[in-house]
Length: 65
Image: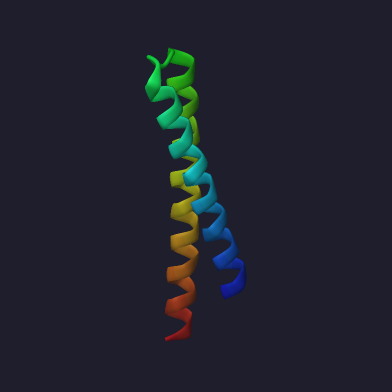
């Protein structure tokens, strides 16, 4: 289970790097409404995935105690 959680968290980190790159690239020009919506949607997905990973990790830690 810990290995699976580690892999999921690494996936979140990788997606975060991609999102940061998108924000930096779109920041050079004035971002369109569509670009802003896409980045916002990606950010929402990333936050939800991170929340799920953290929740699962906490549940696992509680079960170990």
